[in-house]
Length: 441
Image (cartoon, rainbow, N blue to C red; front, top):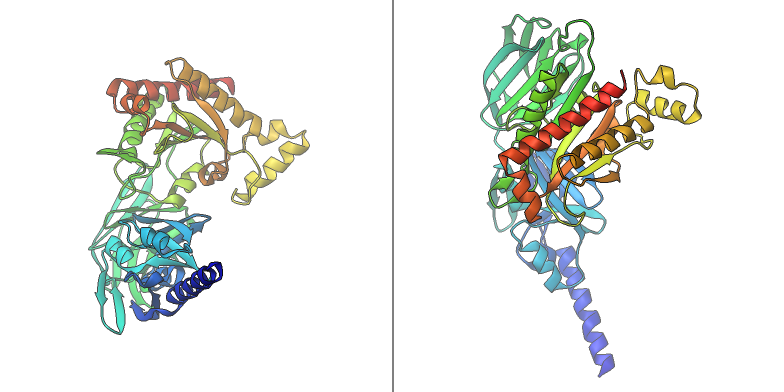
């Protein structure tokens, strides 16, 4: 009996493995072809994540148990799991409303229909093949204006796109079409915008941009190019950058109709107002419901003397109340200047010189301590944490990520959605910055 049961189990395992490996169908994604598979024979098609993203010109980020695809401001986030060994467990994953990415035979696969719907792409299923098509985008308007001393080229399209740098003041508008030719403009830095068709879509050339810093930001159906340096009158003042997390289609943590992106933006705007009223130079990574993108945020972080990234947790696992995170260890993600300065701080003797360019770990920890003390003054107990956080690692200044609480915690949620408490949070944040900056003068 035991032998019979073992043989049956082994046979089912073999059959399940064959089901994972053998059921497949031709998948056409844009102009590329690949094989879609049906894990467990459950009728849900999966495709190689990297090949799918490449075929549609999507941004691709994967780290450990999380995979993100990006199209302009859109972000599609997947949990990543190894394919379960039982059909019942696999069914829970594959047939869920938000199916995860699965690792099968060493490859990361994503659900085709769910991904297509999230992107707004067409999905056609047939007996012998599947087809996913993202219709070419079309440029419908080009606008130039000046904001805080920088030229801004704003391109409006009929759908979201990604752009990739081509060098020399040029960018590919992936899978986009535009009327060919030169469009004269007049700004501080640039003299014209030109569109040319090419192998990846449309090649955008911004004449004059090749010699200046350029920041690219996405908004729904829009791409903005910020060219040049923000004008600042003498004497040079320290720059404080506040980063309200998420934005646009990325809502962050959600509880009912309460969204992280909305709460952190309100608090960030009030914090910026309080600091400007005190005479500080402040920049925000976003001032509306846009997602500027990770690299645009990082670009501002690299210029900050003080960098604050504001978030709200979506779970209770870390406990109630705010958490103040630093990232002071050496990392290859850091700009080269920051990497070298961290090493020189460790060897000692260079503090008086380096502090003009890169803040030491001691400086950052001092700022974190001041932030926790500032929260205590409004009756809120905050925790400390150290973690490897990309945006903090990119900033040479005193950089913190502050989680203001958790939406899953009743006390935190009531505090975060109360306008008076939002103002108190903003004043605590601003006070910590003022005290820290004052101690450095």
